[in-house]
Image (cartoon, rainbow, N blue to C red; front, side, top):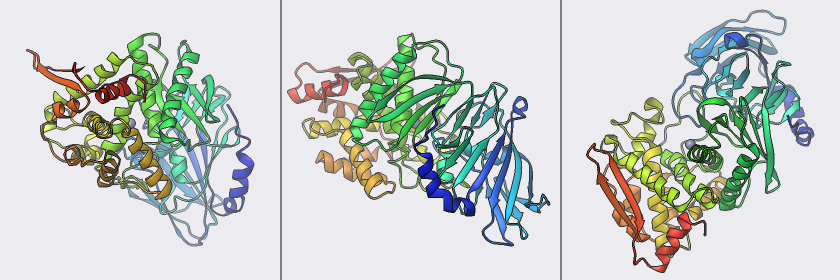
Length: 508
Ligand SMILES: [Zn+2]
């Protein structure tokens, strides 16, 4: 593992005064790996004598918008003072505990976490590796997320590596500036394989994984470098010091973080084109998220409420447009052909059109209801923002390009959202503000496209595709399946040809 020596003195200096007062420490015991149990010791310095200490464990994990109630996995909770005397405590909700501190200057809290479900949103441990999804492992001080945190992990000679985006104090000790950073920084422990790293904009990008098969890792990293270059060029800024791709082995799904992503990945199928492109599309999606959702975000998606949920109607922006950019990034990187690019659009539209849920639930509602229905909805009854969201991206990009003779695109919107709302205003954005920004860049009103967020009307595809000189054809097979065909019309204008090429032909 790389040790980021250059960061340590600075961070230690910054935290040296605070550390004695309010740094919360965790020790992670790994002895019970075979039973899938983490043994946690949490040490909390008390600033106020005779106080009550309220602790919570998150109800959800950022990036996965469904209630998980990690409190269900906690057992054997107890608390002591410095001399080992037991302190009284009670469980106050599914995910919170109250400790009567008495006059203790420091409180030690012990608990266990059952981690037997291998999934990217959950912690998991067996005898081969441990995945620490911090929201499911570490308790927080209710009302005090700003405290710095040190995590020390038990040594395990069979698990020499830790993959994480956090800086280190020593080989097995990590520092997070506060609980939001801690919860944003998963850790994978085990015997990990590392692929050759690359640099973009002077920043190192690494890929470490568990259970990786034999495949051409150098080729994967070349492709990822190309994707990172394309993405960072859109925003003209790289907001992290380094970035880590964390491969979790077999499974499904990935979750984005500020300077890392944790993804189910083994490298299997990388020598077969369609499987390889699916994987690259998936990783490009997670990487794009570090701009779009970790930094550009719906207003309600921050600060995080770990005890409840951050309900928003804006996941069309965070997830929908990120799905839209998958095809754009692969096309611009030269990884897919023009035919593959348009085929992906045809599939996205056909998949949405075949879901009866599209007449029952709006895109905004699918975002608001994700906490109960899950991010993929109940197909037939509901839609998912993964389905309709990218279609909104298509309509916006086509319209902006058409209205500006291909001088502007959705890229300009994304870049402006990043600069205005993340960097300048330092807050999230509403859907109305996104509309105003899109209209300012396009120079035309976009009421109909934005009305599709809130209604279940049929989308007028032919009208929008005709703007870029594309004929939209929809047919229904004998089995009820819907087929979509997109092809350029023969007498399209020079501008329309340019837009067609810009979208799928790698020229901007
Ligand atoms: Zn996503």
